[in-house]
Image 1 (cartoon, helix red, strand yellow):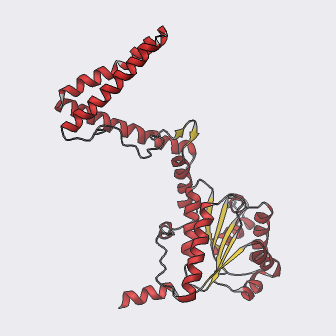
Image 2 (cartoon, helix red, strand yellow):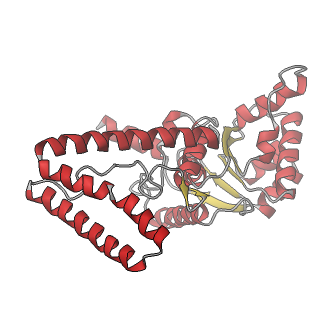
Image 3 (cartoon, helix red, strand yellow):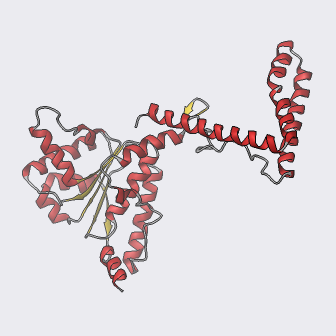
Length: 313
């Protein structure tokens, strides 16, 4: 989704909100005839304002302003006396900040940026089952003792990462055995950063290397691999689950090197330990992972197995 498309949606939302409000006003005026008279007087405010302004009558403008405020107050009180809310027929916008205009003082509203980002996020390779993975629903009840303390710190670091994210943030490496929440927190970071308007790509290592492999031999309609190198944040899920080869190791090194040289952050999660990473990808990759990335260790008992055990009780 482009910004233009997002603004078109906002325009439609605004029109719908105002059409519903107008229909509500018509219904209220039929029920409360005095409301129609007040609205006619309020409608005359604009032309009168222009007339006083042209004449340079500042005193007249001040009186007109007071009269207008008094009329608005009468309207509110009239609605309240009939048991309605004071703003009963005011438009209800999806975004109250910009009134669904898409702009605040000439600047794009965050709602537009979020709409574009979340659209890209949802279509960036993250399955529907992971879109709902948030920091709020990351449960700590499956961790105990030292593991609980460590994972609370990991969760706090991930939250702060999203809050302070910039396109030059430090890369992160999640390491730990399967079922400890690495994918959940990776998805939560992806969603949080995308919601701030950044270009996020979330990809499994298998899909990522398959794309590079396809581009390697393609002549026409070559798959887009530049997106992995140029996006604001790249998240690689389950590194090491792909079919390893000298080609994947070299490809991974080049991708890491390119993003590091341009200061672009990457978040990687893997079940592999340090010796396994070195064996699979080589010393150069290991050096960059441990030297440039902030390493977060995930410890505890397999959460997936604990959940299955709960269901079986």
